[in-house]
Image 1: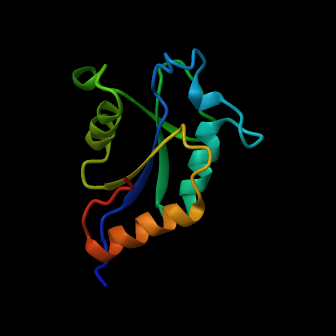
Image 2 (image 1 turned 180 degrees about the vertical axis):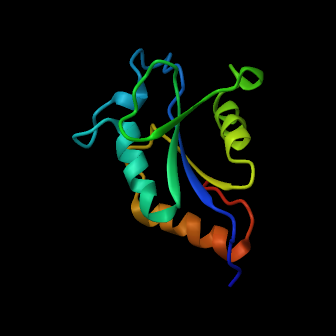
Image 3 (image 1 turned 45 degrees about the vertical axis):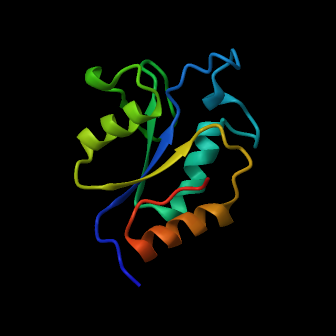
Length: 125
């Protein structure tokens, strides 16, 4: 089995406009806490650190927030990833949208195990 030597950062994508829902998805309460917090806590056992790709002037509890950098603004989730990569250029990222309230820990484990095994990017389809 290959091992991955770079720090693995959990990145919760919570900066979206939630235009279809008309309410900020990151703060919807499905599990007795805001969804961004639930997602971040889900990722903690699988990564070295969790950060939030969030909105300006918004508090995300104890988690570090990365705002979209000017050159990546208004590009959706990829803007959040590219912005985080500027702050953590030598890290790998485990991305999780804040709007998957029923994603299981077993699914996250499968993703991480396959990443470590292949040493390549992996995703669910």
